[in-house]
Length: 302
Image 1: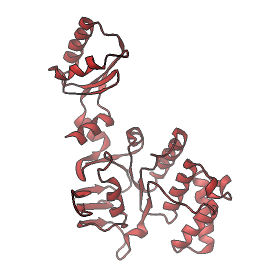
Image 2: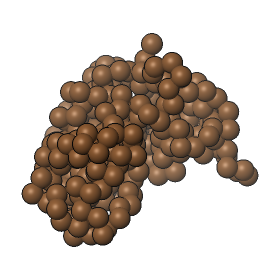
Image 3: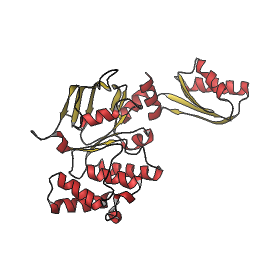
Image 4: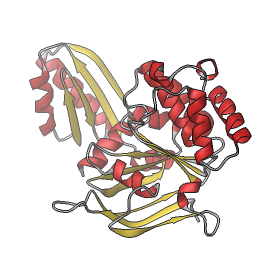
């Protein structure tokens, strides 16, 4: 049995389409799973239902926990925009969180000291949270979410509001934590998901689009891709490639295109011939396999 399993999970806020629509998914124990999807796909609503913070309209959630134990005792949850009492110090806040989890004063204080060191905030333990940076607050939030040693840690977009340094700090911390607890996190930063997670779940409009072990999913859906970058002012030429028989799909950005093809050699030969005939200035041309971003875009389009 997986650590957590949702069956036909649905949340309807009334009127319009459900935010989550008959979503079935499994979270394997001892692994890190990334929940992916475009804005409005239902990621936050899904996480809140799985954490026991929001009642589903229908469907069920099965959690592998001790019999008779509230699911929330076994789950750590960090929302996308955590709020903190800025007048408290980091140590005071974590001690308070420990006491809310029914820890004794001594245990809560020791756990706070341990976690502040673990997340790299030992030197800032006595400082008011209002003076913390965004990355420091996010690491403090993760410490709060694991203060009671949960079986499952869930994080909603943990790096979306951080600068590159803060994002690297948080992702390094998650890479450490996945060794000792099950993690489920939502993200828009696909590179981070690819670097840290073992499994992926992609949802679109509240429904499951794709799920599985990351490497297996990538192998099953891997397709050759050509990346072509031209000098400025040639976007129109890139757009007209969409009608070529060797093009399966094309994503065009200003002066750059990622072209999904079926036969890499035939496509590269035909494309090079067109480039020479049109005399367009090439900055970069690379041939490779689909990335998680390519897979994500295909899943949410279909």
